[in-house]
Length: 422
Image (tube, rainbow, N blue to C red; front, side, top):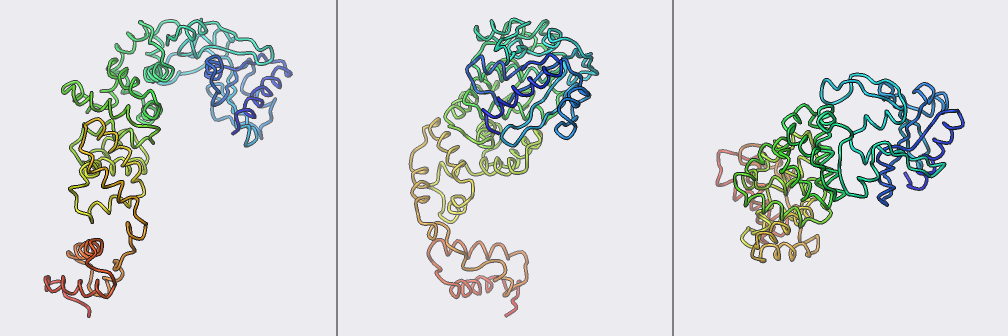
């Protein structure tokens, strides 16, 4: 999707609906971002047309009715244009499950604005007249740098508990303040966050953690009693304030990290040193992808070895340095080392070794599992022998396959119970 093409497409959608006789406006986040001088990631359109009328205007082949029950139709553009959600002006019924309205009824633009979460997200914009339409004093809060719930904040939070995390994210990423009553509503209802699905919670947490303002987001979560709700292990931060101080400093030292790196930084002091399995357990609770779980566990398991690499045997260190995600591990280790004022020898050794030619850093195996199976059946010492051969190779003791095979025979002589096929 190209930003300019997406904006033109959003304008065309409004024009088509207006030509068909339906009031239509840009709505929500795209209006907020424009007024903040930011390029919107996407555009949403709100309209007086019903879902069925939207589909009649744009045709069924160019629309998706996945959200029709809540008045939302997706209009499909080209690859460059992307797609746009067109939502009918609506009022929401009660949110009995604390996540979504039980039903919706179609309404006016002003009523639609009143059912939204925060004033900065309740703005409309007429792209034809180039005019902001503000029923909730959202422009004033944008100028003042305030996150304020629309109408009664206790009701807004009670309707959808995820709004607590959204409020924190907006306050942190825009460097705004939480309005007093909105903050009070979040603190009062923090325990109710558990009704929200792990996937929705994790999505908000990921967006906060990879953002440059991640430290402020985590501080706000702690202050509003939300961090322990999404991460019960974080009670340790309150019990041992030094752990939070160190964690916050590490988070602040990370530059443009991928999510597993910053997640590992957050939980590093909440699990036993090197306990990748515990990291996986926490990640599974957040329903993270297998790739994110695997990388987080790798980072937690080996960050201490990188920091003390000058004391680690080369074969052990070499196996870490040739990992596909070694640069992520180095980034985390350097952030931790800077905070803890580690001696530089460990990281310097890693940097030096990473400069080696690939042939020397990660030489081809002299002997692999298939080769070893020609000598012995897989059994208790199979992996032990493979590891010993690789270690000897990396230490320069073995330089050819024939030497490796001779070494295997020596090792097997120490395990007569294993037997051989030769």
